[in-house]
Length: 117
Image 1: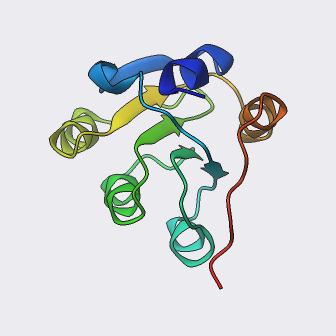
Image 2 (image 1 turned 90 degrees about the horizontal axis):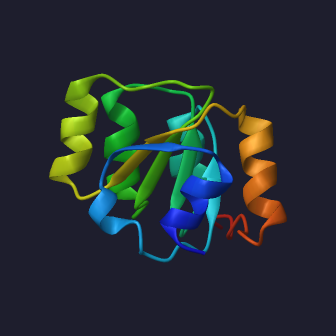
């Protein structure tokens, strides 16, 4: 699946990183707690979250996440988008709720990846 497929499935709007939409993604994670992303997530390509702060971008960078989708129609402030641009990340926003967004991606073949051990 590509980032363009994620955009389509989630009815999302890309806020930055349009030049990277052809990149492949193989796994996803849905969480509003960045500590859970850091503690329990490994090898995730897409992060679905409702948390709109710079820590999301820093967490994504540390965990090699290449695409962040803010759910429930949330749109991050411009400073967060600029931080993502500087790091070459795709940022989008989707009107779907977390449960729906995760379910849609899973139903279309995107896995949850592995837990850290």
